[in-house]
Length: 483
Image (cartoon, rainbow, N blue to C red; front, top):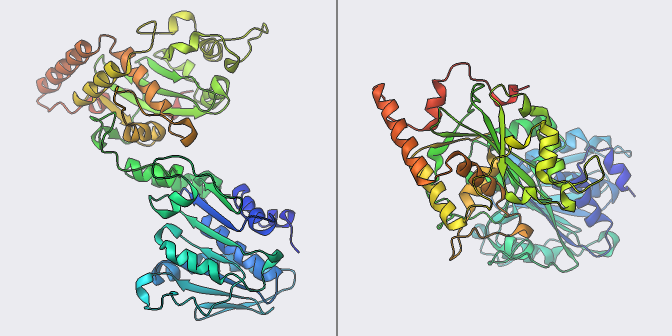
């Protein structure tokens, strides 16, 4: 019998190992949903799991299914064969495998049946599965499959069971259907309390052990529409079409590729202080007019953890100088902000000043309290409406997610739920940034918009917004080159 230590030699990620352990060694768990971001190695995990069980347990029968015949053939089976070529032949018994029709037959008597699970393909009420006796099963992209197919398949897992329990693995990207409601959250967004025989393992792109693939694939996903990007990049299940956005003036028109930092303009970093995650947004006000939002950062372990996250960018060495703003709670002493070198409770702003080598005059607040949300909503949306904000599409993905999905309650507050990963902390530090650059709100915004319009029309050009103004500033440099 193979153990977890053996699986490590096969190059599995920690999440893939967790799935293997639950299905192979946990005495109670019989159903696992491995779901979330694209590129997290879900199909690879299911294929390897089936291969290893067939090699380890002669004479058993597995199942791999997907909704359509075309996808089964062109993606799932293709991945399965790649895994066999890479790993399957390295089994210590030198068992062989041949794919005949829709069945993979192993020389030790084991086999894997491949089937598509489209309910319209047959009049058989059992979807053609009624004659099967299975040891275990893997459903790829289960959100495409009817719930009925999953129930029928479970009823067929009853033959030569390993450790006397059925085992079903399901993999998918987030979707708003029965899979979400059964394993992740209900229709009201509340987390599902799973029975002891079911587990949900979250998949993320970064879980893929192939780091070169991760870097390339993340670049591709960042180019998608915000909602699709959040589903596939971050594996978020609570993303739905937002019919009542808090940032109702935000749109794709304000996203740009590869905005650059002007070395002669001051950089601003706006913070929202939380233990998990602590977040910040980096931006510039260009020529006193529009705002370029250049990068979003987030990290665990509070402000100290975030300082480690942004350290490689060396923002404090920016030639144009650096200013800090954010949540006024950063001035309070509390245990989450850490201990200073004198053994005293530090403030969040104290940690930032020390890490970035700043003084008190580099910390800016528009008021002694955070701007009221109802007023803040109107101001920020007005700045969008006047085309004074440009956001870097690639480097501000978490912020874009907040701008796209945040919704208001009856008091115009943002509806938040940290338990569901919807704390909207990037939205908060973005608001603080806008208020710092436009401290008089509508008056400052209207003045900047009128001046921008006059400036651009004086050159015989339309007034397109902040991003194009940056293009006319000499000696611009990329954010990742600030050292």
